[in-house]
Length: 104
Image (tube, rainbow, N blue to C red; front, side, top):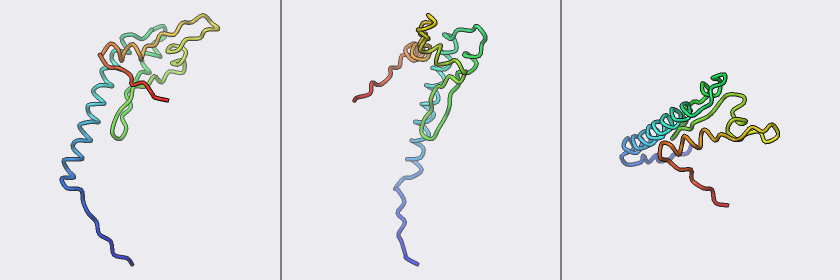
């Protein structure tokens, strides 16, 4: 059996706390966005509004719309003359945040 050295990161507990803080900050921001999105969402059946959720994952969080017809509401259906409502984008704007543009 081979011997090996295990080197721990100095102040590992502090580094872990920083990750938790970043994650909590992301969750807080996502909760604000989700609340704004719910207030902007159309409520014909209430399914779209009820399906706006915050999903937490390691190191962050995201806002999702889980209703089956979410894409139709967000992006519209040109063939059916249903305009895009961009609920999530407007919610992000309303809380003072901006999307990062992808390069490429």
